[in-house]
Image (cartoon, rainbow over all chains, first blue to last red; front, side, top):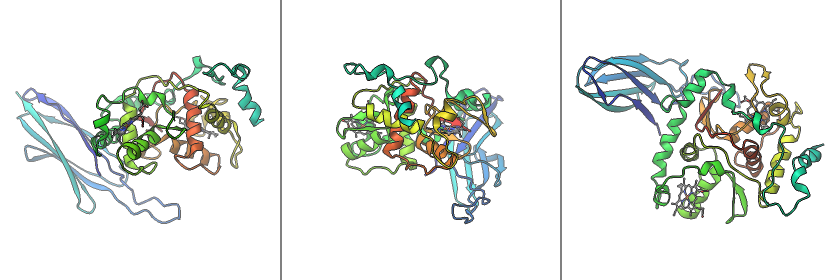
Length: 106
Length: 256
């Protein structure tokens, strides 16, 4: 069960710089920790984040083991047209989670 | 020593059996009482107060979904929400004649009113529902009282708080009553209130119950911790709530 939270303004003026925020519930297990019996806890991390604006990739980020659990990203876009932002996270095994939000640009 | 401490708490009430509401004394006077968030950096407080950037809301949001589930759903019976409810917990349940906390109440609703099984303590589901209910009391003052029905639970909690334990032989009171505001290695000791819980702790990189925090304080003095959800910890939680009366609930709080 993975919860995703997005913060995207519902409306913007054309050309306006808007702030986008995205958070995903994930353990980001670094692979460097040991369990109570001394056994290595296997790495389990998200390795890639991508954001698409009306289908076009405009922001992406690689995650490494140093990224904390439940990562939050804050970044900016220029609002050129109405449509949707799609946020996609992919883990080391290729499993992915996504969610999207609409924006009205006038 | 231990008994003496517990008796002192009741000096006002012990000789007047006709009073129903007891007013215990605490080392930290009401005027000095401050939340654990007073010992956090301004950045952490800002993150706690930002409903988006506070990671605890991942659990609140999941709790909101779970609240719609079950036959009937939680929402079906509690359609007006549960604002202010968390301020009165732990509370006495007449059906079972025991003191229960919010987690216990939620599990009772599942078994009593939904025909479901109890959720395991510290499971993501129970934490989420608890966070969702507690969040509806964010900013409201804790308001629990000691009544004849809950007096023995209060005393057992007070005893736990005053008793030295573990290889370090320290009692809760020695850190949280006598030395709050001082440094313990890299940390500043707070007054040890539970008003931020369930909370997101950076050390856990996770969301957890007050009992998980109590477990950490017990293991911190190298004492054998109690089981999460045990009556001992519920009694202690009750003592802490009375001791924190008037402080605002902050759940989902953020702590180091």
